[in-house]
Length: 248
Image (cartoon, rainbow, N blue to C red; front, side, top):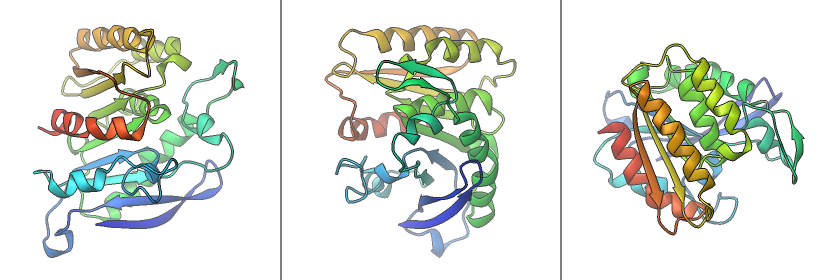
C-alpha cells in the first residue's frame, strides 16, 4: 500500500510530497521494518504519476518480494530545472546548463535529519544505520552516492543507478578521498546501461570509483546493463539485483 503526505522542506521553503510504500499487512501486526529512502518519488510506484508515463513499477516488485520493507519516495522540485540544482551536492558546468551551483548538500541534510526523523516517528521502522538505505537514478544516483559517503553513520547501503557522475567526477572522487570514516559493512550498488553510455565514459568512471571503494574495504556491485537505457523501463529491470544485493 502507498501512503502520501506533504512535509515542509525548509531549505527550499515549500512542501514536498512524500510517497511511502508499506507492506500490505503493516497495520495487522506490530513488526518493525528497514527503510529505503529514494529520490524522484513521483517516478517509483505508479505510471500515472511518472514524469514520462512509465514508473519503476516498484510497488509491484515489493508486493511479491520475499522481504518486507518500507520505501520512502520524495518528490523533487517541479519548478523548471530546479531538480538539476537540488539533486547535485557539487557545482558543475555543462554546455546545456551553463554554471550550476548545486544545493544538494542542503537537500541531503534535510533527508538525513527532518525527513528521517519524521519517518521514524510516524512509522514502525528499524532506525539504526544497518537497516537504512538510500537509492536513486541519474541525479538521484549521484545524490545516493554522496549520501552514503557523507552520512555513512546514517545510511549503510546505497543503490546508485545510472549516476550522473560525468557532471562532477573530480568532486565525486575528492569526496571519497576526504572521507575519513567509512564502515566496512557499507554496501554500494552501481549500474549503467550500454545504450546510455555508448562511449564507455560512465562505465570507466564507475570502475575506477569501485576500485577506490574496494581498497577501503567497501562491498560493491557493478552492473553493466547490456542494452540498458537511461529510462525507468531499464531501471525497473535492475530492481531485483540491487534489492537482493543490499538486503540479502
